[in-house]
Length: 470
Ligand code: ADP
Image (tube, protein in one colour):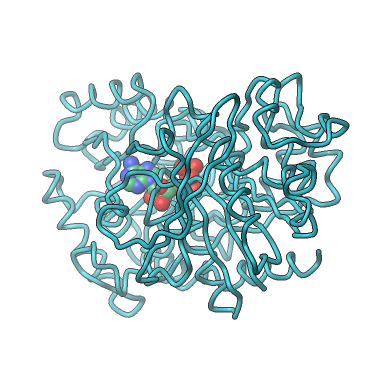
């Protein structure tokens, strides 16, 4: 099967969160299953772009509002990603370092999608299936079916995967005029709640819709930032497929970012050496349990609760643990987390940054990973933590519910709580501290976690199975 993925992010070209990890690994595993899988994404000005060799594939232009935009398509030359990576530059829109966060984001991703369709319409060997990811590619299933210019593509099947339904790409309805001319009887497909809503449009137009965990799918039917009714209506074509992790990138046996490589046989020693290294870097006593948080500082991740929860935990268990935070996002949360350095000096550090290397070192060296998320479509951090023998402390929601079982159960290995509240977080830290005192139990749990297979192998097959069903 010839599969084309379209996404705003793809690791290692450009990453903001889990979307990049998924789009950078699923095609690789689909390729291993004997399919041709490629990725089309915007040409963000990232270090990967400047440090790799590229081949020019296409130069053309698209009409956009009352102007014409030139675009070019380049392909990564060495193909050591194990899938073909194509980047589209629409002149004026992608000459910037960040993936998101610009005032003209809606126009940027609108232009990217129109250029993608324009380029696809010139292909001689058409793909069997186009797999679009999140709202940034959400108008593609509509354009494919209903823009006159793309009629010869209209038999290609489409799948939408929702990595996060909080963001929907809303724009004024008038922007629909920017699309290449389309059947005006179909305007209802573009609209949701008096706006042009690319995510809603993709849910209506794609042949199948998936979310990145079964539990998240169930939650969206009740609460999905305004789309619950639509999910109820389209239930028949929706399903949840849990994300896997890329063992080429996330494996303590081979990870070149970490101090000491390890596997299940030398787990105890490997964890100790990695912990000593990271504790030395942040002046922590490595005898104490090390808790970490890694992620975007947004309310979905309940990052706003961290300052209070951590302070309360330090007041209650002073001198009994260390806490290291890595992340960025809401400036108020960044400030609150930075302000705590002095008060809890020697036991607490927050690194306000995006740092891929440090994240690997933290997963490898920590004892516990905190994920109090209010919303978690799948969550990859807990899967990486399991792989690196770090016990996840999670709020049971979405993918966290599907992948972490509380150690109080016979087959359990993590710490789970139900409410995203300061009280529940502090209580869970207390449970973790008790557990840490039982070295035998901790080692048993670590062995169990590291042996769980969360690789893409099984989920990649589930996607192929889904494609075959349409
Ligand atoms: P989301 O996509 O909602 O941000 P996920 O858990 O699905 O959350 O994926 C987050 C990914 O981003 C993981 O690979 C995590 O390690 C990484 N990540 C998040 N914040 C940072 C950061 N500040 N530095 C390094 N990696 C980060």
